[in-house]
Every structure is written in structure tokens, then in C-alpha cells.
Amino acid sequence: MSQLVTDTAAPAGARPRDGRRPLVEVVVPVYNEERVLAASIRRLHGYLAETFPYPFRITIADNASIDGTWPLAERLAAALAHVRAVRVPEKGRGRALRYAWGHSDADVVAYMDVDLSTDLDAFLPLVAPLISGHSDLAIGSRLSRGSAVVRGPKRELISRCYNLLLRTTLAARFSDAQCGFKAARTEIVQALLPAVEDEAWFFDTELLLLAERNGLRIHEVPVDWVDDPDSRVDVLHTALDDLRGMARVGRRMVTGAFRAPVGGRTRPELPAGMARQLPSFAVIGVISTLAQLVLFVLLRTVMGPLAANAVSLVATTIGNTAANRRFTFGVTGPQRAFRQQLEGGLAFLLGLALSTGGLALLHATASGASRTVEVAALVCANGVATLVRFLLMRAWIFHPRRLGRDRTAAAAVPETETAGETLR
Image (tube, rainbow, N blue to C red; front, side, top):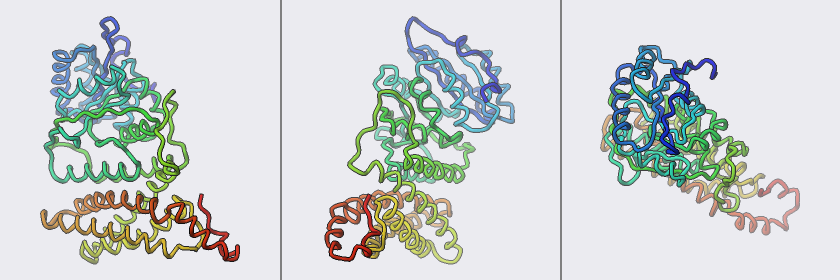
């Protein structure tokens, strides 16, 4: 693909250096942003030229715009020092960032959304730990203490639910995967890029998960952020793509394929067995959540939200417990299966209480809430219930010592009755 990319200037020719001071490249991915592009780039360029203490380059990365964005980007690159433009002929924010970051000769690469919703005063705190070598990647966080965020309740709820799901199902430790304000040491990000599969909105989430998987250090900066009311992001479509991306990453974790050749780094050690159990649990959790949401939407055509939630949760909890029994904790055969389903029912009751309470609270505070908001509330409640369910299963229902006692009690039973049960 690289031979088809249009570049207004070779990277070396746009490389302003002062002795050994590091170069920071800021990439602004754009698609059909003719309306705001010029004002945003001029504002960003003016801010960096006046206040930023390091050499910089601004790269406008157009990904297949069909309006006047690309000609405007070329004019801006010709008019402003240290600004260049590249045109990637296929759509996808991740694809644009992959090209710009992958071909950069800067010491640190970053990206910002073109609407500049994040206060630019956070940019130096974002990149400083990367320049000093303290951290490998850095993200702006709208969910950290000290951040100030102005946005509608729908976006706030969806964002919090998404990040909660990442933490509960994929063991993410960063707080805000979606903020369009990130940076990384170039050598690190270029080592990670070949292992990142997504080319669209899940790209940076997958990059962060991969970085954590390889034991890299992620620095978070609280940011002030104001929502762009004219944002053209399809929230529901993007959320579904993100769920599919989480399922794909979970599968790669299970198979051990979610790795990148970043030398000298090792993952932090998890408690015994958890490194294998978490990815399996994550994949099953994502599939169960999607199945419950589909059932909920279908049942809502014939019953109220609370009843639809209860029925869909009962059905998926039975399947979830059975799948985790077999694939996450390695227990096969019929012995104790019924008891373990009953004990798994406690997690069902917790999930039912959380999701029913969340729906009731939603309709009490926002009567007439849309189906999309109902689904977002369910995702958030299920995220909390998922974390508690994993802890219950690991520490109680399928605890190795408990299963060992079952084996001891079954020792007197003929071998043909117990041979099917194994604990891996």
C-alpha cells in the first residue's frame, strides 16, 4: 500500500533539528474534514510554534476523503513550516495512523483528533515522559481524577461502559482507550504495529492492549475535553466494531498469538493459572454479552425491559457457566456440573440485580430512554457483574483445592464414572 500513498514532503526534508533535541511528530488523521481542517491545523501549528520547547512536525493524514480535504491539506503543507500531508487511498483512521507512524523518523509520534477537543496544554505533559524515557506510550484520559469533561450523558455512559468492559474482560489497566490524544516512542510503536490488526477505530485500543501484554509502560495524563457536537462518528456502529475487536483480541490472547517483538520487556507475572484463564474468560464474556444484547433486543418487541433483561440473562448465564467450566477452568464430564450451575446462579442473581437496577435507574432519571441507551446501560452493568463472576468462579466455584476435594471424595467411585472429569 505504501507505494500508493501521496506525500507532500519526504520525512527527512521536514526534520527540524537543534543539536540532539528530539523531534516530535503530531499526526492528525482526517476524513472529509474540509470544514474544520484549516482552522484546526493553524491553531495547532501556532500553539506548538509559540509554546512547545522541542522541534515538531505536523502530519495531516488524509484517509480517502471525498470532499476538498486533500487539496486543502496540500495547501496547508505548502503554507506552513513543519507541516506535511499524506494521503492514504483507503478509509480507516487506524490505516492512516499505521502509515504515518510506521514511516516516521521522529523520536516521538503522537496523534490528535482534528476537532482539537482536548486542551492543547496537556500535550507537553503527554510527551515529556516519552522524551525522558520514563514511559513507552502515553494517553490522555477523560476518566482520570483531575480531568474536566464536557459532553452529553449518552456519550459519557457509552465511554465508561466500554472502558469498564476492557478492564473486566481483557484485564486492561489504562482508564480511557478512546480519547483521541495519544503518543508513543517511535521505536516502540513501530515494533508493535505489525501485530496490530485493526485498521479503523479499534486500532489504538488494540495497540494499548498489545503494549500492556508486552509489559510496556503507559503514562496517563488527565485532560480537559469538550465534546464536538458536530462529530460524525456513528456511535452504535463503532461500539459494535469495538466489541468485535475485543472478541478478536481475546481469541489471540487465548492462542498466545497476541505478542510483539519488543526486546527486553516481559509481562508482569499474574497469579498461577490466571494468564491462561483470563483470555478464555474474556472471549466467553464478550460472546455472552453480545448474545444477551441480541436476545434482549429481540425480546423487547414482545415484553418490557425488565422481563426481557431477566429472560435473556438466564439463558446466557447457563451457557456462560458451562463454557467457562469447560474452556476456562478445564473441567469436563458431568460430575458436579449441576452443583456448579447452581453456584453460577449466584453470579446470575448479581448480574440480574445490577442490570435490573441499572435499567430501573435509567428509566427513573430519563424516561423514554432510547433502545441504544438501554443497551449501553446493560453493557455497563454486565461489565461489573463479569468481574465479580470471574472472581467467584476462580476463588470458589472452580477453585483447584475444592475440585481436588471432589476428586478425593470420588476416588471410591468406579473409574468409568470419573474418568471424564479433568482439571487442566
